[in-house]
Length: 73
Image (cartoon, rainbow, N blue to C red; front, side, top):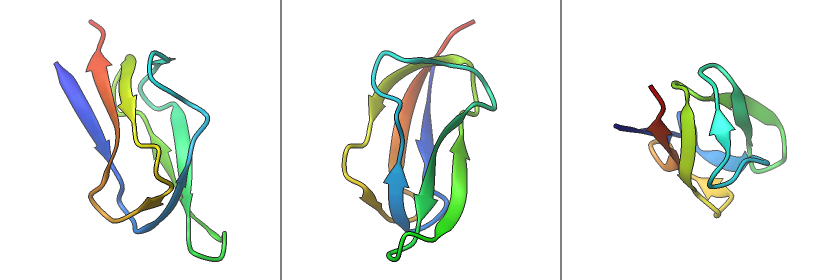
């Protein structure tokens, strides 16, 4: 099973995580800022799993898939 983590805001997405990284539910994966670098929100993992892919383009719109996480049972 897989889960796509989508952006809840339009802005610029930043994260140090990459494909192959293991994550836990509730772990902060990154954050979103506005055009001027002002903080908007954090992005958290909704599940325990491994990152299958991460978006590499910092500008994002609301609903953009940021990560795809494969579940670990």
